[in-house]
Image (tube, rainbow, N blue to C red; front, side):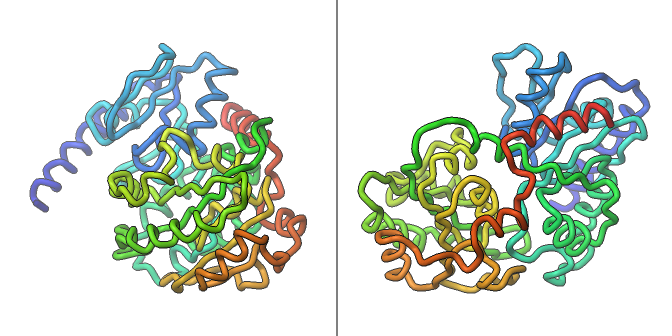
Length: 356
């Protein structure tokens, strides 16, 4: 298998190197979660680009799909067409990283938006071998614009966990969060959004049996007029979709997490950065941590914007009757973790991208 991978890698390098000599096209290549979906910050950026420019957009997707808008097309992730687009597109937008062979041309403009404000420890802070973070560091350093939600994120993640210089960091807020500020229905969802437990550095533990038990307990406790829903991490989404115990609670994947947060009455999470997204517009955040996270957390309990428990009956009581006051006042927590979130982050980010 390693021989097959080496051949594929060499072929990709040849294609990419050949196209790097071709003229750049005035277009935008967008990628989210290594081609898994049209989502997160790149999706918000793409909508704004369609509204305010005439630039063609190219989405990198593991399963390419047709788009209704003739200005938008897709290429298969890590195909020859993908490497051609990576080499010849003027503007590049990613919320994770491009492959290790990526070598940004001087006249390309690269916006790395990342995909969350860190709560669980990352990078050097978990003692990861440099080989495991080298491509992330290389992408951060290559970016012309490295997006941050706050000085906390800049210091904790970019400067701290990955040890990069932060002269290219722009603290403009998170485009994906803008949808939470749109007028809409009153918050009627109690959302359980646990992060993934690690089996390896990149693979998740299958803990869906435990998640099913927790969802059953949460559904018994939700206040009248609210609905319990579940959003598992993408690493477990496919398996969760086939689990009949979870089916009543799962929301279709085409409805983005931030669109769910816009309708949230209460958010329950463990170590997920989704807490900071919800904090921008919501206040009922409960941290349910039945086990310690192997990586550890950046924040102590008295720094969290919500109360934390490891006890399921206590969680049920908080969901039903209301949680105790958060350890940190919500206004103070917003000022620390999401000071730029105002529903206008996408416009600011796109303006900087086009002016870069």
